[in-house]
Length: 82
Image (cartoon, rainbow, N blue to C red; front, side, top):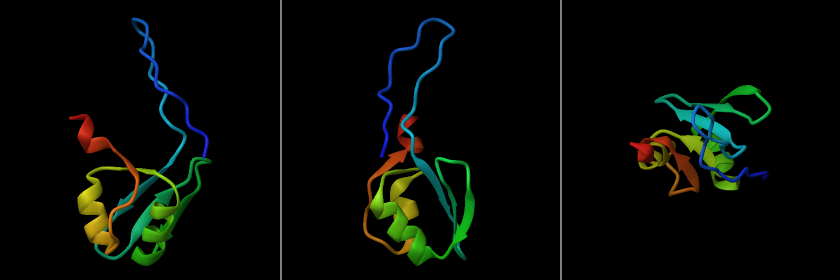
């Protein structure tokens, strides 16, 4: 996994984020966005396996893990920013 270290942006600059996939879990399955831009619909079991393999971007990691039926997994939780 390639990770870009966040840096303090200059005025009007931007923040570099880690290169990671994004995962959204719904009641019937999940959607996975790869770092390359590929979008896939996955079963909850497969989404849980991928989430445990490498950190992913999620919104509310605990709720996502509960919805997937997996334990915890490493994640970049966007909800924690607020």
